[in-house]
Length: 415
Image (cartoon, rainbow, N blue to C red; front, side):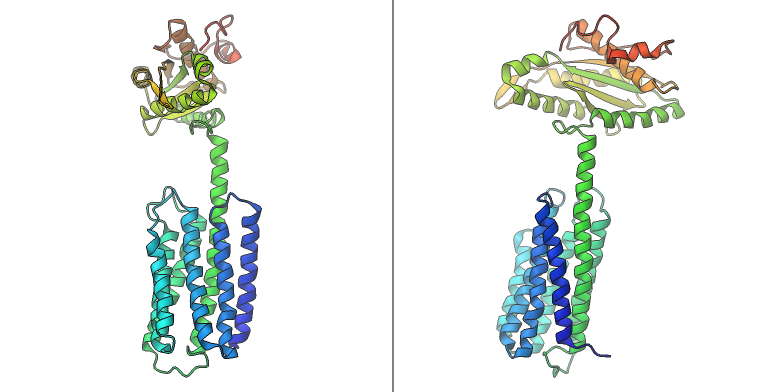
């Protein structure tokens, strides 16, 4: 059975047009999708390449050759740029000439060999295979930060298919000896190429949209679990992670340490320099504290100017050493904000123990580290205080109530 190529061109134009409209509608509805508008534009250019090819049937052969090559090359370039826009900051991007030079050579070959069907088609197919390879390299994303999710693997599969199609087309052109088909390229080769490209477009577009959705979901999860100002875990996320570490420490009978950190006299910083400067001080304190922790340790913004660090498999002595390192890292060099040096110190309360059983174990350990922080404040600030190991209280709720302060002492020491 043979397919009627003009009918196929109409079907491909409609399919590509519908796909382009859907992608552009999604891109128009949400501005947060990076590169999606570019991807839709590439689909529009691809859709226009089919009626451009059909101009040959109307006798406009030279115009058809030039338009088809220009639109096809541009669609590949635009899709490569869309991938680069999506992953900017997450992986390495090639210099612009790597993307544009093959497209320029494609058009140069089309113009220079306008009346030499065989070698024009050989060179164009080879150059488009090269462009597809550049597209594949960006789908793979060398040096990608983070693992490759499902959407990216779909795009990799689609671009790999495109590369294989263009390489096979190039090899066929080199081997072919008969060039009497109606449209200069044998009809069965053109039909097979167009079918493969349609499959690639569907696969790549589905994968690209899925990449965007996966990234959006990841961002939402990041916002739900991290503090926007400092980039650290927020209180809710740390409490969820802490339950896991408590269970692990119980099972292994290993100590778990908590460090409650508080910036001394932070209200004075806000009053003297303004809240924007105070925010930057918070960020810099968080960075210095994070730099003194291990990869397995967790640091969260617990509220206001308070931070809580969780150190698995760490004794009280080890936690005290870490806390002293953080205290020195913060206090020995002033924070510099907008060229102004702002001396900052912190107080740290430390508690370490093998966690006990019970639903309030996490709250009790936090209360003890907070009590140690209170003692550090009461003793003059800019110091580390360690409380003894946790012992079951007959009334654990009394330790935790009011979050942290012993009865009658809450609010006595500010900042």
